[in-house]
Length: 235
Image (cartoon, rainbow, N blue to C red; front, side):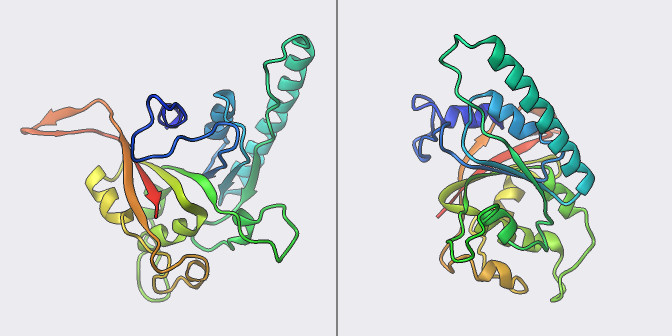
């Protein structure tokens, strides 16, 4: 995922159907952040935009915050040792929040620390999912109207992404074709999802915008790969 995003930030390697991303200003939201390793790695690669990691597990969020504090102290010490290096830009703090993507209020992720209730929601430039949809798909939980929670997941993700923004998902359980069926054309006005209905316009949806190639294998004359990563753009 990180290498893919770095290519999107390079005009010479960015696909023609994607806009070149700015490492300085692109905002990043990590769904199911765990210990925050994805966002910390992106910071190391020079991504400086606002960044938020969310997870339904309070223990994971607490751990991520502890790692964040340790890294901040480490960076401060490094800055003291490299006072003559004017090329290093400051690394804005990565924030973390406890949030259930299936039931949580969008206020937590679209307004964050903004206390102005009249302020417009701020969807993200890039939303990342590395295994969260897989976990949701394994749940037998259903919505009030009888749908599996994984059926609602694409509708819940859609309002998080700004129009023209990207949703990047990695799965070990679903093929590229299956992920495309799940997310391409998804709308945020589905049944049983009032919160998403209020934030997404009826005509909005995801379209395929890229993929990551992994090492393939062949079995029984069929070629495949154990991991699938697709990029979708919100239109």
